[in-house]
Length: 248
Image 1 (cartoon, rainbow, N blue to C red):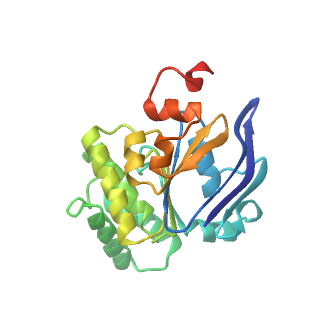
Image 2: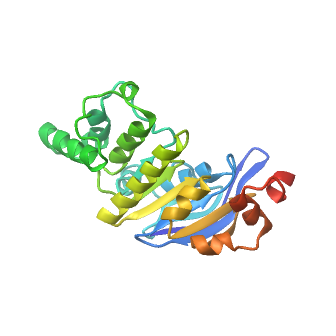
């Protein structure tokens, strides 16, 4: 479903992605973990087509994002849903209107059909009865749920999650991860999660990749990551203050 081939990205003198290569299989839950500011969000933006690599290729379903533009890129993006950090909801739109936004932009459904679909998506994430509330009127966890409903609005083939539980309390975090897993089971698509929340992603991921110093230094299932010998991986998984990640 996703192929990344030797992708490099620099911002000024800083190399953020340094020749990254990996693939993600269709229908899996894959998490990219690493320290805050370590390039996870930049990598995710490349996968969505919001950033273009300095060199290398990103392919979605065999199509090279760098070679697409205009309608072709929009067509491919319709296959992808994104849950941004902090949800990125429109403050001036209700929960229903936020979820309806991509439906209005990318479909020719009637206003009634769009509202009905938006309400159905909100019900899927446990927000039936909250359709007319605005982001300022609901909790952080509920805003994440609205953002997830919006990411699922077009029934995408791939959903990208950028720090889906950032700023949430432990109980709400657990609820969001349970919701992510449940929605994946209900309609098996490809989920890609960028996070530094070890406990959460280890519970729901089929595969985990560790991003450090612009490279994927380890990948495998959760059990393999717990036993990986790489010093940076061991430090990050254990949360130790001693190791290469803090010696940089």
